[in-house]
Image 1 (tube, one colour):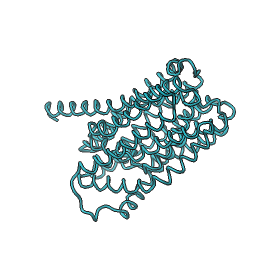
Image 2 (cartoon, helix red, strand yellow):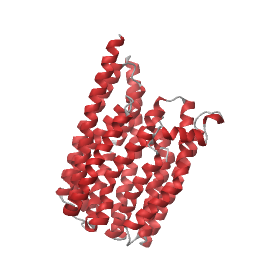
Image 3 (cartoon, helix red, strand yellow):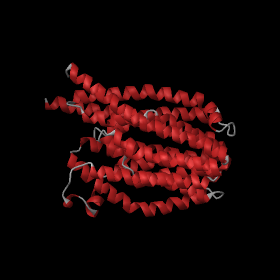
Image 4 (spheres, one colour):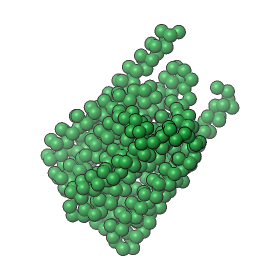
Amino acid sequence: MTTGGLKTAVRRAFAHLGGYSATVLTNAIIGLAVVPAVIYFATPDAWGAVAVGQAAGSIASLLLALGWGFNGPTMVALASPVERQVIVRNSLIARSLLAIPIGVSVAFVAALTSPDQPAVAVLAAMSSSLAGLGMTWFFIGAGDPLRLFLFDTLTRAAGTILGILVLAWTGSVLLFATLQLAGVVVAVSWSARVAVCMGPGIERSLWGFRDALRQSRKQAYAGLTVVTASTYMTLPTLLLATLVPRGVVPYALADRIGRFTLMSFTPVNQWLQSWVPGGAHSTTDLRRRIKLAVQLSIGVGICLGLFVALAGPLAANVLSGGAVDVGWTITAPLGISITMSVISRSVGMACLLTLGEQRAVALSAILGAVVGVPMMLVLIPHAGAAGAATVVATSETLVAIFQGVYLKRAMTLRMDSQIRRS
């Protein structure tokens, strides 16, 4: 690559990172503001109802997304403009068909697990679940952070900000949840329209009900991976609400701190999802890109994990105004899970998917769930929030190790294949 070409590539990379960072930073600030706002203007129990609803909704959103948030960016990055439009339209048809049954189901679960404030939990669950209809994955794969920010992020943020203002004025967490849901509905509708209109016109024979179902069947591994991984990550909150209610608020707050910390790696991961597969011209070049992606994720993951483990108790105290106590027995294992999650996101979503190893990523998620769910049923009743955090750390560690071993094996096989061909 010439000096001029290198400078152009670096500028493009930083421009994309800046655009994705704007989205992540906005989401993080708004999301963090919700925690003290609900606790201060309502009650910690109201925050618990919101957290339970969001936990249920996050699982539903991944069911609704049909795995597109997982492998969609890579597929879009490799697709032609016409192929992108086929993907977009068929994905919207398939996901829309699932919206009502999944929405009804998640509303029932949210109301059941939060009997004190069921309406709040239901609205929070709907806000989280409808995110599965969004087009974030498409804008990431297309390398278009500007449209992602304008037509998705800002609209969601506006609904939440308005909800916080109304909450501060009226003290009604129900109105807050309603306005937040309205922002999500508008964002999902707007971003879908933009994604459809920004591409070329395509033949009607390429998209429709049958094509959508056929395309959805090909998403089996991606959907299984995302739903399985999300289940064992969000199930602790639901089990705590059922088995050890007093552990819900401290765990949910610590988990939220961990998730927002993890969001700081999201712009890098989003860039890697298009950079690793999008510009490799040979197996050697691809190997170099994968190595850099893994090394970057390990370094960043360790830093973020240490931050959650060491600063988590103080952050929880600040966010809750001293109303919620979160100890190191919760934040230390969550710090480990954050480190491993950063690594597995890079290894799985940016590297293994590029090599076409969707099955390996799905198997890693199944491994995490098979080990994690039984552990939750044993540790949560005895150790509460600390037990839940320990289970998540164990599952994430196993997932990262499995993916790392499989990635090394896959790259060795590819190099051997190249040598035989030459």
